[in-house]
Image (tube, rainbow, N blue to C red):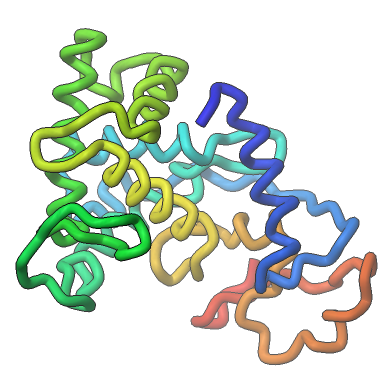
Length: 231
C-alpha cells in the first residue's frame, strides 16, 4: 500500500482487461453520481457499530474514492463484508476446520483455526489496540494518511496480533474489499453497479457475445444484476 491510493484504482481498471471481466480496450466510462449510502443500519447484521467504523475507514483506504469513481464505503463494501459473515463462508463451513493447526508455507493456504467471522472480530479488536498503542486513538479516529501507514505495517508482516500475524488479517480484508466492489449488487456491495461500470462489465446479461471481439468498440448497454436490476 501507499498514500498514492488513486494509482491503485488506476491499476484495478487497467488490469481488469486481463481477467474474465471482458473489459473493452480503450473505452472510458462516465460514472454517474449516486447517494453514498442508504439506511444507517443497512446490512449491519454481524459487526458492532464500532467494528463498522473500522471497516468503513480501512476499506476506504484500500479502495478510495477518486476521479475514477466512488470508494469502498460508497459502494457498500462494508455491507457486503458484513453479510458474508452470516454465510457458510463467513462461519468457516466450506473447508476443513479441524486440527492440527500449525504454521506452514504459503502454498498450503489458510491455516488458522479461525473462521473468517472470528478472524475479523479478533483482527479489528487487535488493530484498534495497535492503533491506540502507537497513535493514541482508535483506527477510525486517525487521519487517513496514518491509517494507511498502519495498514501498510500490517501488510508488511512485521506486526503480530495476539493470535496471528497482522498480514493475514490485512489480506483477508483486502481480498473481501475488492470482492465487495465488483460482486453482483445482490450481495450488498457494488452499489448501483458502479464497480462494473468502471470496468465496462455487462453483468448478468443473457447475451453479449457479439461485442466480445470488437476491440475498441464501446459497449452500448449498461450492466444488469442477477436479479434483473439495471444500472
